[in-house]
Image 1 (cartoon, rainbow, N blue to C red):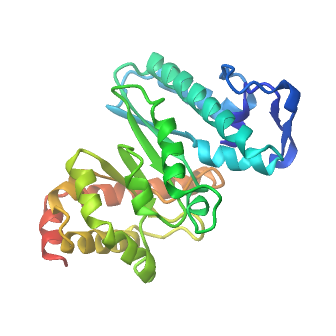
Image 2 (cartoon, helix red, strand yellow):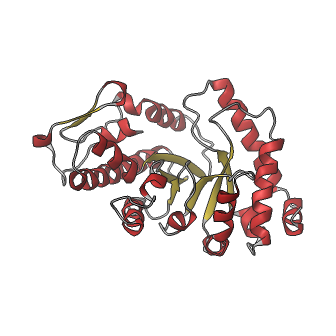
Image 3 (cartoon, rainbow, N blue to C red):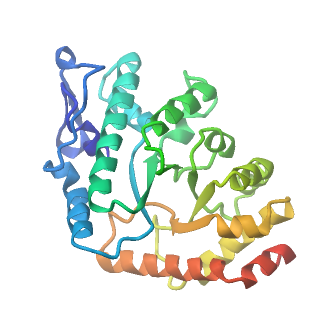
Length: 295
């Protein structure tokens, strides 16, 4: 994703093994960043557009994601760029690319609502005590990128690290994409339950939560039973804290916990089969009663 964001930035290019090359003299912080879909970094995105154009059965919603400005800033700073240069450059690049990609998707799927998710794996690191930027500034920075999402589309933020519910719920995203907190991790469960009133408000205002129910960072589950049990436990705990059981059922998506790019097609298909299985379970009318009972 970093490589995609670097495309079209004057003075910045992706090097070997994930490195970033910077020509300070060529930088233009206010310059328009061009999205070149013929570049290698956009190969998969271009193939997706091509396949979508050939279809007539477009879905009501289509989701895609792009690196968030915070994570891109981290990468630029680690390449040697000063923070005061990296931050505005990252914001400009992300906004320009997201606007351009929305137009490309709309051209081939004009009747599909786009869910545009900003991937921020570095969010947790930016919110730890001692970070040179305050949490409020971090939240405002990520929120600034959400403004690039066109009216009629839906913005989202994904963080596969430890979830900071207060920060995520303060960004104004329509969809929060987070891993299901492990039942064995008391600290993460406690943090989620402490945020129950804010989660209720998010859902009542039409917001959604994309629950990363299938872990992809280790052995893949043989069936969906265990991931479903973990998810149901988390949802029941929220219901017991006052979250509406009908709203949380209707306004939840089920996803893999993280990306599938490092897995084989066969493994990816198995993960998505588990996702569909759990989605079907949560959609069943009986689920509402199950959650109400807290069983």
